[in-house]
Image (tube, rainbow over all chains, first blue to last red; front, side, top):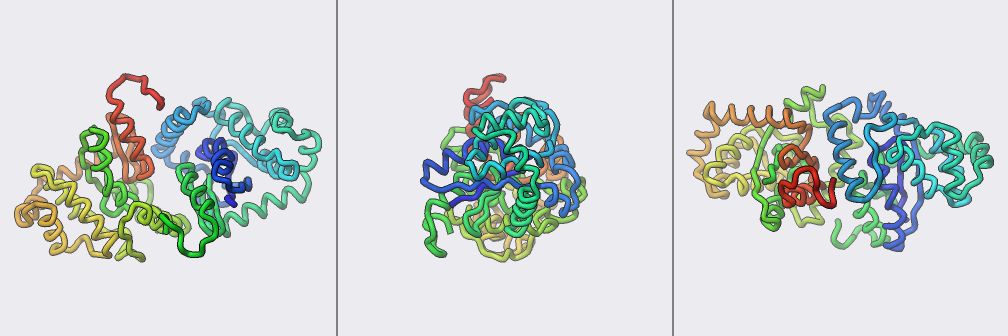
Length: 206
Length: 206
């Protein structure tokens, strides 16, 4: 199994989210969607904003790089962004609420498209409800569930687990203890997952 | 033409340096080796050390990631490193001194192998002289030349140019104004260079 760790504010999580299911399916690898929050992790590093805003030269590069990646992958990208970073808290709770009924993946892709492809405000309740519906969920049930203490705690626990696993950015991919960071590591992560549990000997890798 | 910007202390510049000439040759693209120094750039961002040391979680990930990359590329990697980051000043000046006689590429590969594959001290004069010789240069001439004001100024100018071009890390690749950052962007950079000057329309990219 491959676990996909993502944050709705994260730019490089967008192209990763749009193809992770297809790549996992093609490799015959199970996929678990793991939304989490980057803010607590960045805060612990002394950042109170995205590093792409703190270091503008790096930010300028990132947007151009994302533009190239989206063009290559055929994904819509509208610049400048509606707001960066957007607050992904509500969307992340809804994504967790969708796990039981299996619409987390479709909802996640819809939120990323709204954020980076359509310059929409992903904290807007009406928008989020419409995206839940489009993903196959029931907006009223999902909204109520996303605001229960259970889901709120589950998102906190997910973020705590990310930190414990050495995750420091998004997107990240884990296969057991093996961590891969970045959209550009997705293929390697899927290849690693496909090789299965062969102890410490993994052909062509380590 | 593709320009390859690298710093001898940079871990991800190692796998990039080892294959950039082959990839450029295969694509029929001219290559220019552009050693520069990261310290002035990092200092300007408020860092007085490698970000991989400042953020240990990111550093731990980087070493593991580099291990996987080197295993995949068949490159030697000895861990822990001799010292990280090593001071690449002398090696960078020698690399510039090698441009005229065309041994910069071979020397660069030799220094990276010594640094990351053999746990050697790349500030050591005897080692550097032996690497110049192995690369096809004359150690005495190269050493004298590397310490002239011309070469010292040329390295400063190269670093200033990197900053002006929006470079903030290594390895970086430029094709005209187009910037690519990271070993994992090398293939894209070469593909971009190969398409040549077709104005603003670049098929399959932007």
